[in-house]
Amino acid sequence: MGQDQARSLGIKLKMIGVSFDAIYSSEWCRCIETANLMNLGKVRTFTGLNSFFEDHYDREEILRQLIHKLQGLDKTDLVLMVTHQVVISAITGINVGSGVAVAYSSWSGSAHKISMK
Image (cartoon, rainbow, N blue to C red; front, side, top):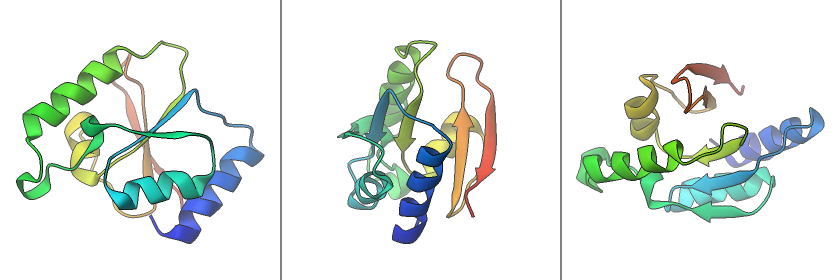
């Protein structure tokens, strides 16, 4: 997501009253920058969101950490996670491109692609 897209999305979410109980980002600088530019609250990095594309990290370990995190969320928590296409696809089965987000329920497993353009 480009810098302007990140800022714009943050503004739109604030305007409609969306607030998050927690915000997590991959440890990669692009994800951290995107999460911070959205200006929606304190961003915490989380290894379980890192990309395993081209074996940068171990796929099974990343997914184990992320699934553990998702299972530990309270049913009422609204959490923003900024991550990579391969991670989103592995968890939700949805392929995304730039400017696209996925709303995902860790309780029901339902996922819906949302265009941010």
